[in-house]
Image (cartoon, rainbow, N blue to C red; front, side, top):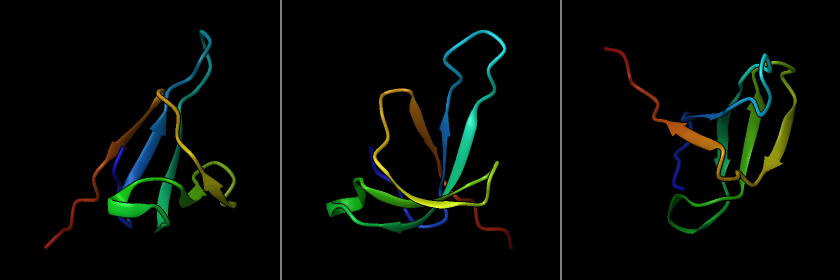
Length: 65
């Protein structure tokens, strides 16, 4: 997985009815855009160091003009 600052990471819910979680990448600490990432969680606004699993996907940050 590769991400850049500003990208969104989405983690799919694991059970029926469980919501997806998302976070914004604040800092990239791995080489070439790899993990770990310092992220801000959308549901709690907490910042944590995150090592994404196979259930996570990156949604690139789209700049608006």
